[in-house]
Length: 460
Image (cartoon, rainbow, N blue to C red; front, side):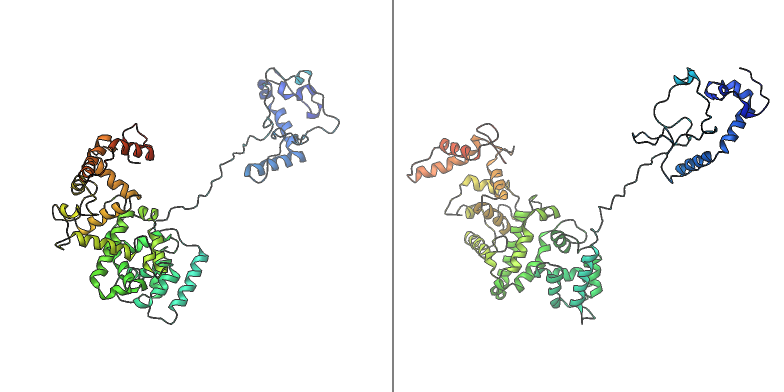
């Protein structure tokens, strides 16, 4: 379509203003007309307001408010592009425009074709994730830190040079909230140079700045007792704590005149701790095992209770006395070692030779004794704890390994009958009415209801 134009823009035919109906070639051939129309449109006040709004929207200043950009039902319908014709003089639309030109595809609801080509890109909001891992522990809250500093200043007031070991116990109990018999261990941990003095700054640096204040008590105990280059607690790590317990606890004052029994008591407590807490049985007590045990609660109970015999878990002196006396009775030559013949006399010969042989084969637990065929005091403690309290999990595991001859984790009827035969023979020799093995087996199955098919029992 070729078209020549000479004259004023206002005298243009209305049909020509339907630019959507013009071919690109016609507009290209009459560029003057398009430029005039565009210049006149730009000169309108409404156009200036629209362009300013679009620029602000592109900069992110305000919401886009152009006709066709709102998808909601409450969109404003009168924000159309400003017309270049005066009110009431708008030319009629072409009849073909009502249905749309076949050359112009219909557009879905969205940004207007006449709208700004600039698109608003909604960038995802970056969510700030707070730090959840701290290498040296979570720093204490400011309120807790200030309260601890206030208490620290009170205890160190008048001690410019610091506190000595015998003056440090109130700090351990009141500020650190630890059992009082941890005072020596904590003092030595802070006084790494062995000066015999702990200053206020040294304590604040270790306990507050070192984030010990925000740790749970099990982690605090673990950190204080363990060696710097290890990730577990050994038996020797508990010695300083038990030494102070023996020296300061009112229920153990009578042992101060007998250092030998003090040492045996401390050993027995340590053996009991590792028997119940160190479930892996490797002699290395981990932080996980410590947290899962009741050791911390027992320590706090021992610190608060004046009668040590009321602390039944780990620390009872009466329990130690019974276990030590039984060992001393069996150890006839008093070399602190017992053999099979000694152990067979335990409980008025309650044990059979077969079960004693099984124990000395070290299947349930390896002996710490270096003498072959001999059981040491620590090995006896593990045995007697398993014998006297068969309801505990370590005891169940101990005796299950004894009965499980092939070590496949399943106890069969034949394995149980193998150990019962000797007891049956004893009853017959003592002219007692024998109890058949079948009756015993039925009672066992009725009590435990094994998960596997009869007559097999698994350790559960």
